[in-house]
Length: 174
View 1: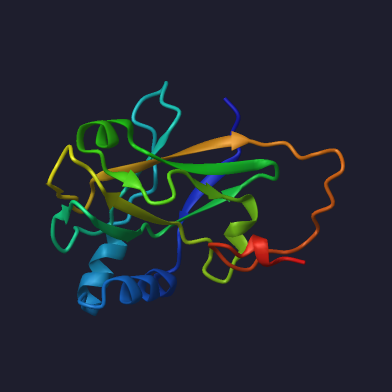
View 2: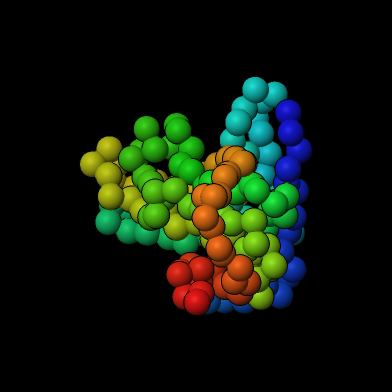
């Protein structure tokens, strides 16, 4: 096996800011408790490829058909150059409930770690399913998985911009 990354918690201030934006109903004690409950992603077995991500919060209510929820994971990933983290659905959750990631597969680039938000990984789940009317996700529930993969670049690649941001920030580079 090749070791190419390290999962870390984001700072409390970054996590708290995300929680306040996404869940304004949470009090400061709730946010502190959620931060303390953050579990670094881990593989379930020696042969597992994916690192399970665990929810640091319980959903305020069941995720009903037609609803979505964005999870502040409290996690960032420091990767070696030439590696990418793909955020994917957990096979069992998608198969049993039909709940999916809003962007199908999340691409966490190696340089996202250095952004102003410390590379805080957010995951949006959507329940568009006819398989289940509602699902419940509690604190500590594994709800997605990350896969670390090497990537290549084209021979005539000329990218030299520096990232500072998340969704859509790389398409804004000159």
